[in-house]
Image (tube, rainbow, N blue to C red; front, side):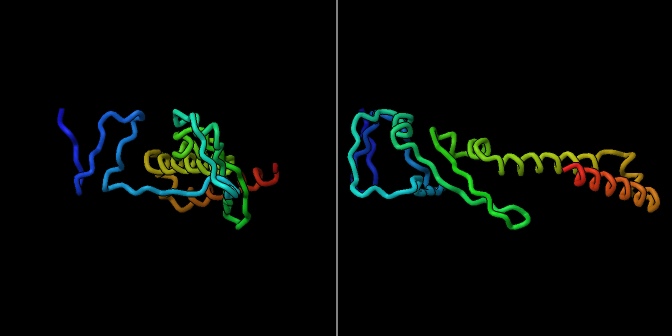
Length: 149
């Protein structure tokens, strides 16, 4: 059995209970406080054997302020119940504000795709009269949508 030693002769056991690997040197670890109140007296909690049990015990959550295009602040509470909640999909799934932004992003991407691939639309945009007519139609549609709110 070969031993794995680091700089300085520190022994690294290969038979760890949890499958947690070291962070590669080309990665950055970000940490943040995920509870609103700092505990008055730290406590030792025993018996937590899995990451899910730790999340269930501590129930980490954070209040986030999102700012929209008009400068209005939207406050949302994000809860974390597993490691997947820290990814972009996990955070977006919890946030109506981010879901709206994600939908808008998808719509803009569809419009860009249409502008790049739709030959009829490309031809209409090249002719000044057709472009002006299309612009008027779009402005009318925008106005109708705003009036419907």
